Length: 125
Image (cartoon, rainbow, N blue to C red; front, side):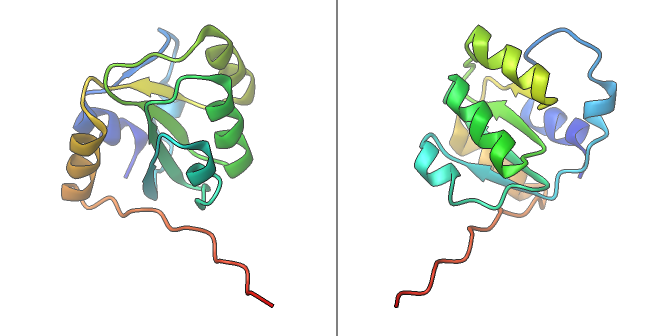
């Protein structure tokens, strides 16, 4: 599914009014949702969209580390200015939806976008 299709399903708009045409064509393979950085760090990121209500710079750093295809802020939240600046530097698309996280996940699930997976747990010695 393309990022533009996800935005349409979620009624999401880019956080900044910039030319997002190249972002919109990015392929989204799965979706992850969390408001906890510790949970995000257990996700497999490449090709995955992150849904979150966190708006600070740490969420951008986590998305970069995990190679998320983009971030969609739920509940009408907008990221802090420092987070927007870092996302631009790291080429991470940011979108915002007025929908709750629950409804956002439900809509994407109904559209057949699979849930992302967690990293494999380390074997216990």
